[in-house]
Amino acid sequence: MAIHYHCRHCGKHVGSLEHLNLTSEQLGFHELTSEERQAMLEYDKQGHLQVKTICEDCHEALERNPDYYALHSFIQ
Image (cartoon, rainbow, N blue to C red; front, side, top):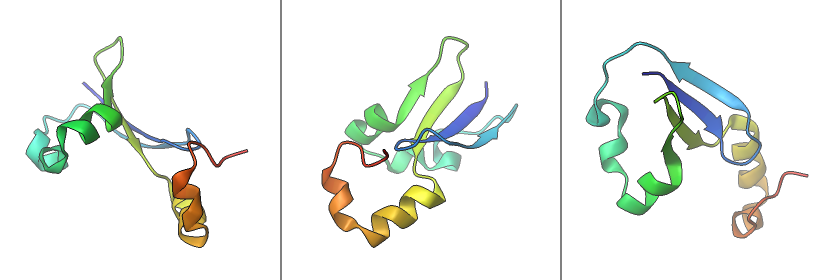
């Protein structure tokens, strides 16, 4: 099973972890609420875990424009 990280805002591929036997605790997923897990984690048809995160560019945009947090999508 691979773990792929993608930006929730722009869709950019942030990184992947391949062929590692990591636990939920090692990845920090145990810190998420059930709602956060549902919103951020998803398995694809091949059984790989897709994790929604925020890339550096979108993070910087959100820091400069905090009102963007209220928008469903701020990427044009």
